Length: 256
Image 1 (cartoon, rainbow, N blue to C red):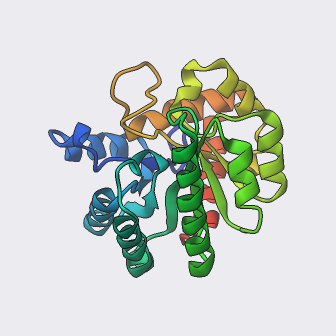
Image 2: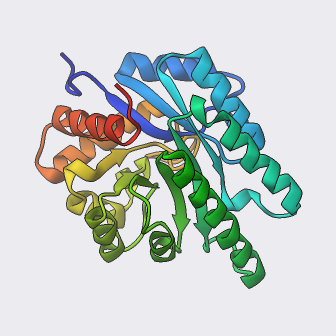
């Protein structure tokens, strides 16, 4: 058995993005051979939601979440936004969760645009609640506001979490999950979070093609580097972290 036991899961990636058009299948093969047993591909708009479903249908080790990222709202009409929400609702039966969706105050400084993010996020929250599916949150420089907006939900994942310790603890107290990306391998603040997130509320992800451990394009096999480092930080074995995060993911997404 490998140092990762029965393997780890990349809880959030974007393998449908153009960054992988030349070698997507090779990337998947590398991940599988290294010990990544499942990948969750998350949509951010209509096109990527469609592609995420296609990937999940093609590969039995992949699952899809259907989202509407705050970073893809600019210039979109309300009518088109509604069509994206309708697509998510109509295809939710093929997905394990809703998202990513949320707030991004890092990229968006305009108050009107931020207010629109809030309005759209609320629609996605309502949709996740009505479908009884987990919600995957994208929140950057807006973690506390996002947390307040989802306080009535039961199943929430804070994807690529980079907020404060206090907000993290509030989220965990509500039973939510904290997903740490591979940026933990080169970020002191994320390593402090890794030390403090309870193991039974932790997920690991790459957010491929972004946030690579050593810059450049990220890919799912690199989630194992996070598992190895988090294990060292927590004084555990990589197999213990891989097993716990796999168990957590299957629980939040109701995967057998």
